[in-house]
Amino acid sequence: MRRKTFTQTQIIALGFFLMVLVGTLLLMCPFATRTGVSARPLDALFTATSASCVTGLVTCDTYRTWSLFGQLVILMLIQIGGLGFMTIATLFSFILRRKISLRERGILQESVNSSQIGGIVKLTRMILKGTLLVEGSGAVLLSIRFIPVLGPAEGIYYGIFHSVSAFCNAGFDLMGRFEAYSSLVQFQTDWFVNLVLIALIVTGGIGFLVWKDLCEHTWHWRKYTLHTKIVLTMTFILLFGGALCFWLLEKNALFAGLDAKGTFWSCMFASATARTAGFNTVDVAALSDSSKLFNILLMVVGGSPGSTAGGIKTTTLAVLFIGVWANVRHEEDAAVFGRRLEDDAVKRASAILMINVSMALTASVLICSLNQVPMMDAMFEAFSAIGTVGMTTGITRGLNVFSKLLLIFMMYCGRVGSLSFALSFAERKRIVPVRQPEEKISIG
Image (cartoon, rainbow, N blue to C red; front, side):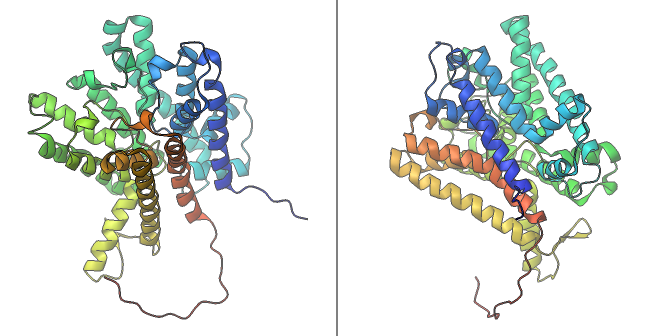
């Protein structure tokens, strides 16, 4: 009898589940909290899931609740969750000089959404070295700003923590030291902190395959792959277009009292962090409903494939727009940058959007009805969870047990489910011996 083995997708999903379980057990240790009393199981589970799935939603303030040990556990979960547990496992294989098996290479390929298994080990080395370089640089730069305020030891620690959290698009912060759940509001007009964090968020969110292309072809646009061209174009449009929209929506409201520099950095940071980073430099609850809705749209999109970010991904949105444009013009092929998209690309993109939005809307209705909170806030929370964003209007800690468990499930699906959608595309299609008769229906 043939022994059944786990598929690569199942291994990745199981790996994240075990990581959440281990993180929960560690955070339930008495010495993981500042009070020395074991955290409530639900709070430990919620925090471990949020960190492992690089989301940032919390039911208790990170600084005021968790001890140094607890914060380091969270930081470890963020790093592993951002890069993927297989990438971290490969790091230990490199250290032990252990040969990486073909099956492990296949899982690595799926983890980073690479189209080919050849050169995957080399790509993994580049990811590890690049992560160390980027996070290290970010930590040094942030420490320059934090040391004068917090002192050398704590300033360096804050620099490291927030650099890792920003690069992994996690949204966890330690600013509860100044005010609980305040995130980075006190740095709203600090151009240096804003610039460093935006750079870390964008670098982590464009994807490792884009890294590879940029390293190999530097500034030669024509040599980039179609994937890289779409990611860079969409990232530019969403980052600066999003900032412009936030300015138009809030220039006479939330940003009315700021000068030009403060408004610019507030808009840029709001645009960058909305696509799965989870930090905030303005009071999210004070945003107008139109800004909250626009924020939700950015959260739906998220980052790019094979990155530390979540969401449906920038390429999915691009494929949908390209497909619609081709359909409007009655063109047989969907093409962009002189290349034709594969035939079922639009079908896959539609499936991802439909599943994510349907899950988030269902969760929104349940959260709204069970907690008597405004529908806009419930939607914001649900889309933030499934997009692994971490932004909130402040209702997370006040939700009932079922709603918190629902958000835990959404965060897990947002990190693992999105991968599952992408991974299933590469699997061998089942050949159907008999096809049903075709019949036309009216659409639109």
